[in-house]
Length: 279
Image 1 (cartoon, rainbow, N blue to C red):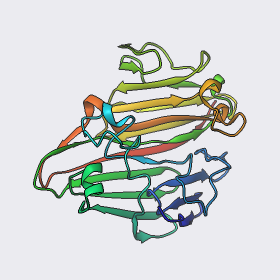
Image 2: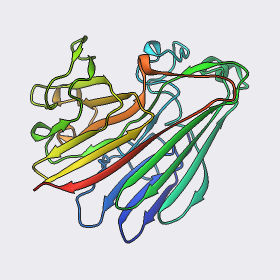
Image 3: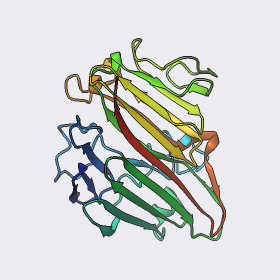
Image 4: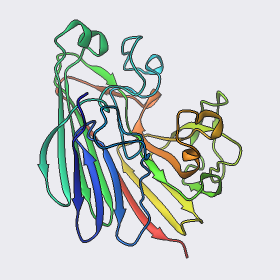
């Protein structure tokens, strides 16, 4: 991956930025609010490694490669390669951006990584709300599975004091404890690391008393929601106490909700983020 190019999207409603590296939205701050997306201070604009924070794209597989129906090579890195690829910037304005990535494997290394042709497109609208549409099209001659996730890092006052609503009643795969069951009540972060996949087409709400706001997460054509925070025990590679100030609430289609794309078939999913003051 070459050094990332960073673009600013600033208008009367918000200030935001994104990169052609991984088609990653890096920041979004509606006027008069704290930043909504968390971005590590170590994510320098000119760096050649993926930025930690913002909204990385995880595809064509999610998580550990061997757990994905996409069946990438056993040496494949976690979360796929779209987050490391350089995308083409198709359109850009102060409130809109469109980026595209075309994958046509031709070398032995590319075929071993993922042997199927596809195109991906990300459309982003920056305003009082942040709206993303991720689409994928099978341009191959064979059907194949893909995982996809928009791995959003949300800026919070203190993760130990927040609540996540909207996941009640969903089947939860808790990868920390290796258990499954129906999730009950608001999700909290008072007992350590959280890394769970929820089977749900519903959105979620982050209630943050410290910032006196709620972050509303809406989605379409997404059957999975993933929630992650490493807690102190798994934050050794992070800056001191970074883990306290973000939570990942990701929308996607992963694991048993992976997509089977037939030749010529397309799929899209969307993410909309809103912010409201707590009464």
